[in-house]
Image (tube, rainbow, N blue to C red):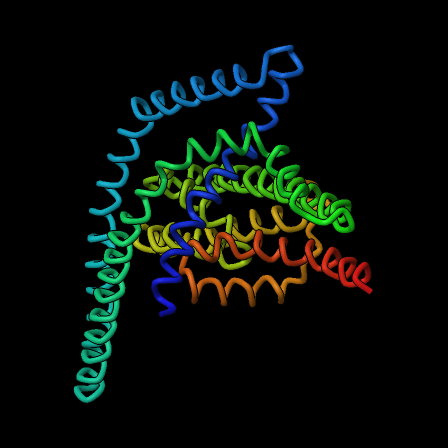
Length: 321
């Protein structure tokens, strides 16, 4: 019973969230075009044509590089796997026979679990292909988010009692603008962190810099846990190349994260978020359990919705009294 509901929630969450995300990024461009006396529908058409051209350029220029990097990365992962397997076996052979047997069983158990984990991830990836069908709705949703967001709010308000309209309008507009600011700020922060991390990878002469940088950008969307996971592939690759330099790479990545948390986040977010770290960590654990990686990405926005909606609920209770 719960599994179909979870799949349906993910199917709905992915296109709606991505459409809202894209609309948040394109809305300022549309507003600027409208200020230049270009009608709203023409502004949206100009934006769509520009996005198609940029995407086509991406496919022609960047996509082949990404494919090449992915192929090289797969070979690198196989090389790293063999390297670490040989290293572990070398240390195991130095142990007494009893411990060697236990160590062999342990390494076999680890290998089987890793293989099982990879198979589960591949199965999950094929499962997400089913969800990708719903992505065809994204351009339509983006269109309506750009054109009819205010109309949608007003239509909802007409169906409410006049007693609640003012409060609901304040809540919907406040939540809409707050989420837009959060999404823009988080994307900007992830891009800056990704670029800084890319500079670090370039200085350490790591292979697959572009892939590793993009991976860090994506993982940085997840608070606390994301940056740690984003730096692990680079650390493993450096350890295979030069184990003495891996500590310096980790220190450099920690410095980037300190710059993010102590300098960039306060400047970009200001004091708008104001959510306790414990609440964020708990929400990450819960949503990861329910929705996997997608849930971790959306955990903080959902927490923001709950936080910003609670004062509205209290005011409604007061109005009823």
